[in-house]
Image (cartoon, rainbow, N blue to C red; front, side, top):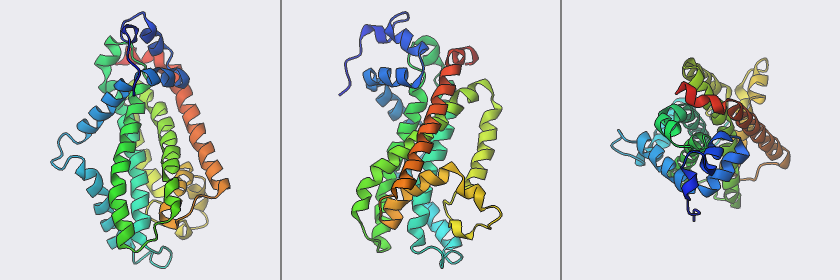
Length: 282
């Protein structure tokens, strides 16, 4: 249950104003702990806005991974059949991870400018907006686990106890995505070209991340690009409990957690350094 919000949370000059100025990750999280009502409101609003023009609404969250999986299976299952067993499961796990990453990063870049009126009028903690977009992405991912379970059953995959580890994998992925969102959110406010540049970068990253193909088919001369891709570390921690039915190896898990925490630290530091200038560019 959220603690009751007090008068100072929204009055300039009170503790809310100090929270808005102190926009480091620790200050933001401390304020969020007392303003989870605001976080919940922003998450719900983000979900409503995302599917506002969609007839299917949240149901599309479950249908889109299935449709993408069917297309990838039809195109690549024969080509990768010898390298990947149960290709539909392999593909849909990659799709779910990629959707969380791509949608959250893109939404984070629009989160500050889209809430310009709130930021200019109320002393709310600025990190709350990219954080809310990532939490909305996690909610979408949780809903998409329903079709994933259907695919697991239809393909005859064993439902192992390793699936209990999945919340940890999602938490690691969310921390990494939040770091990227905190880094890009203020840059998108200061430089409008960042949105277009990020769209291009995401297209390149998709092909550098084994979302729908196995690492084994990558030519040796360029395989280092895939192996050093930090997204690959996070993806494999997410994929292991689902596709391989195992908890990630300790060394790999530690590496993924380190990558996620590093991304979060860099993103939080960048956000804090630029936080005071954000209202001036909105």
